[in-house]
Length: 121
Ligand SMILES: [Zn+2]
Ligand SMILES: [Zn+2]
Image (cartoon, rainbow, N blue to C red; front, side, top):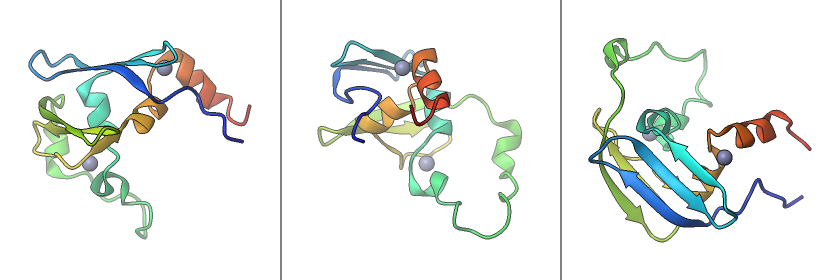
């Protein structure tokens, strides 16, 4: 089955680094997505953030930084080819590559969340 939630082709991308409000993407199918930088930091797709699955044992204890974690701010954004962008965060993390397909997958809006919830259908 090749159906996806939607067309992961952005027609407009707005990354509000200075204002700090987050990322807005308009998609070719008319859908609009909005993400806070904190959300994108939490969903960071890079190997460092996603690479714990194969390790033995439960999740490692949170690093000390997390104890007084403040909302992640974006300190920079740059295009990666024509399929993705990367974000640099105030905690120094900058290895996440956010492909448009990934962004569409993690769209936090109620419509997209309910599609995920209903799974196979
Ligand atoms: Zn990461
Ligand atoms: Zn959505």
